Length: 377
Image (cartoon, rainbow, N blue to C red; front, side, top):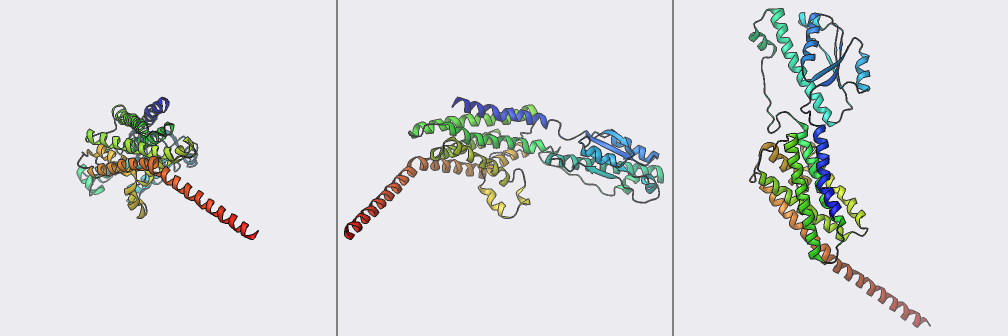
């Protein structure tokens, strides 16, 4: 029991520290970039300078060969490439559309989508500022007039709870807490007591307590060490974690009691918990899935644990905001407890009756066969 508890306590936090440092430089900046400039005019040189001065880009090479862009991205030396055509400044000064080509590494993971969106956003800002300067210099416009000509309307996007669009704020804690849930179930595989219900219940509660402590430490580590936001009610977060640890510990014990192949049986079923993270819409939004999943989502435990916990941390929700999830989890805990009781008390009785009925039927069949044989003789 001691070793599994230590694993439950240490593993999520160790993984959390490693992932936390991996994402510690978000929001993304300093993307390795190669620039191919075919236009040697002062206009193009000024654009290259603006790109270099922007913190989103880390210009590692300037070239005149288009093939270098593909080469550097394929070799993993660059995450982005920018090609400025030779008619760039000519098109600007003659009122034509001036285009530059931007290449991104399409093999990047989901975190790479943040890179691509950030690059596009930054280039859009650079383009607007650059065009304002061109309008001022070429057409002798006043700065304010040039601004209205180049950008006649503006808009502001405010991302509630995550203004920097930091992917770590949305993903890391959820992944770690799903790991904790798997461990809540997994550690019960090492409980060997299967005869006395009181002893089983006591050990499950101890496992649930250590799982609760581990999950709480995980959240605190991410909040304190890596500045993951936690703006809402502490009580609401603690209650969510406590109910989750109880529910999954009861579920794990129910599986353990009914396991015919020991630990292997439990371990094979633990992976189902990680699958619920996808179906609950944590890693992929439910509104982007077929309609069926919006109904299925309600029955996924993660829907009522990790997603509300993320809302508490990022949006500052309180206990009243997530009362529906709390009620669902209380029902989940009660159901898992009843499931464990069923596995311990009722299922063995039903199996015994089934065996007795089968044996009685076999005995009756044997007796009938004996009578038939005696009659034939």
